[in-house]
Image 1 (cartoon, rainbow, N blue to C red):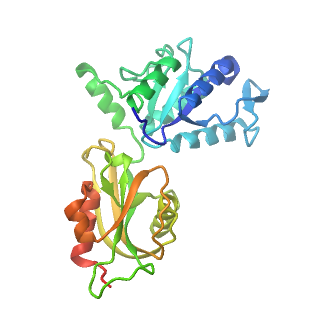
Image 2: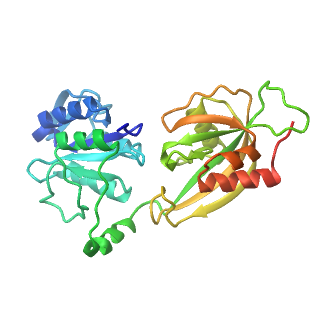
Length: 312
């Protein structure tokens, strides 16, 4: 089976006690096509007060190293997972800290062995040897989903209530063609739709989460550039809506606020990143008729056609 793109992993464990095992797991995962975003280096540079420093570490201050490591966890995305090397069942201090952050950010956690030194709730189907995990991912195209028995649902729901932050702001754009393409008088200007993995291969618009201390318009320009390589000019807002209830992709209970705009681009040559597999320039009315569009983007496209549609 073809594996999902951008399946990322952060490997956790005691570099001092289990570094050879971490190295072997790192190689096994990499050879299986999993993108290991941390640790970045497989060579130990030294040790200070029991804290191991790798060649790729940008500081010798363990607090800075740990925070940079946690930043990698935040980059995993919904297709990513954390894997904990705990051959004796125990995690240790740093990995325990990282596990707490994983839980608060709803990151999928998998373990080499069952936890013996924590009261942390770990769903069933979370303990996998490295080789078995790679075989599962290669066969199924994704990491193993958690299994929540009926008598544990109340515990699982308690962990979900701890997810931070309470609200996430996302921006999106109806990206409109203002290239040198010739349109007939009164003809709809084409808009960009992308077929995306995170919406089950349905079509959607360009967009993503707003980063901390980032303005909405700046976030949208960044997302358009990252996802399509196109420079853009952001114009009026189309609509704002929110979502709490699960929709088949977004996490249950997570409050998402969507703010969508019109964006003008002067080029049509798109270079997609790993978030989408296909794109199409299409008149917006035709897009509604012919494309399988995910519900949020469909709502935005309908609002655009009602009040903001651009014609030549």
